[in-house]
Image (cartoon, rainbow over all chains, first blue to last red):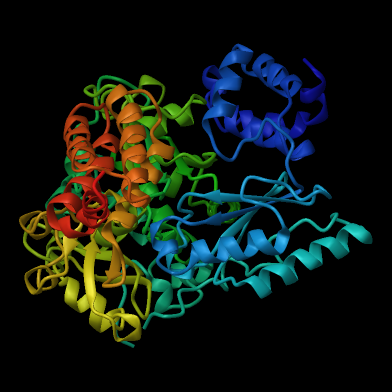
Length: 192
Length: 423
């Protein structure tokens, strides 16, 4: 088929098996996530190869990439810190939190630190309104939520990433999900 | 221990996310009962009788939706809407994370009722960890013989798959969701035809919200008559209210439909922080018409009939509380900014209208708006209403129109300043 297919053959076949064979276009988003995992963003070449696998035009794939906010066609930081400043979060200080973070990192939302480690982004509601300030960290690997955050905790987290960069560990210091609370420890503790 | 929760059962039974614990508490008996003792139509009929209505926001009767499935066109699909994206809503996430099997059992029963052999769970892309978690839970069900071929010794077979979106509010709209699941941009379809006649891949499809489906095992296990004892006559059953904003204890609260705003905000949510007064309530997230927090509003029961009587909607019951320090013009600007970002661009009134409303609100906030600008803003909002394929266009105007009508002083402040300096 093509290089992208060969590189991820097993996983691609596993993804395609989730959908009826005559509707393999449904695998569009999963395959784009797969491409994004390779380098943190999706290249024109990836799009062309995915188009070939799904039997659609590259324009269709490009249109999909442009439509969804979690898909990126340009390189960004290794860690994308996506702070929610939507209404419920804003009522609980999310805008001030983002501002503090901008100052501490020396970049504005939408920009990347000069070392290429962090892109700071302002995002719409991520369904964690009761635990603001909250952000998610997107890497090519996936997404991790960080809830009830403040500047100090965030800078400590970033420091961890920097240390992992200096002395690369097995997983390159990416969030694995185990760094943050696991699903079962997450709870709305305020309730009876 | 008395049963306090029917949907957020993990709060009473901490390890209910473990298959054996869930089964020890009667888990999957409703699915077994449906498949082995009931016909698909009987299942649908029981859900119809229960009065269960869609918890995603529209409040459409669930059983009725199932009964609309075109039986001359096969295969059928069930799609669980786990796109939870309304600002202020975070209930489905808690259900899937903490009580996953009750939700999955609901998906399975719905699939049996409409004779679908495949069901998809469409999760917003941000729920990446939740999807991985559900994949594990689905695998456990398969290993236990609760999914797969010849379930409970019958010829019924079912498989459930998760599918991640990639960040687009509009995909919570059911036809946009289906487009997205088909690998396209998430843009709403012209309706009718509705999904029960033309859904996923053009085949009959039931699309139900996560919380809606989580109610289903209870109804099958204990019966529609029991279910109807909870809530009000027309708004039956329990509801998870997501409470956020200026309250001491934000979070999810499972209460019967018909509970008052006052009870939710002051009794359960602990009231307003810092001894401030409550100013306004958004009962349905950013899509709400804003309610001034009068005594009449506070004493209004939160159900599908009562909230419209005071000028808003219950929607997904994502209650955002706003204290007296908040400028409603600022709040309206926030909501418009959201909808401008999330408009898919298909319908001109929504695409252009949200852009213009955003521009005008920018002027209001900068103190540069003239009285005429306010009129144009109101007019643009009115012109979007009812002229778009999906509800997003209407949602985008709710805060604008209700804000100007009900909190005029907050808008006029900026305008007055301008008039006084003689512009």
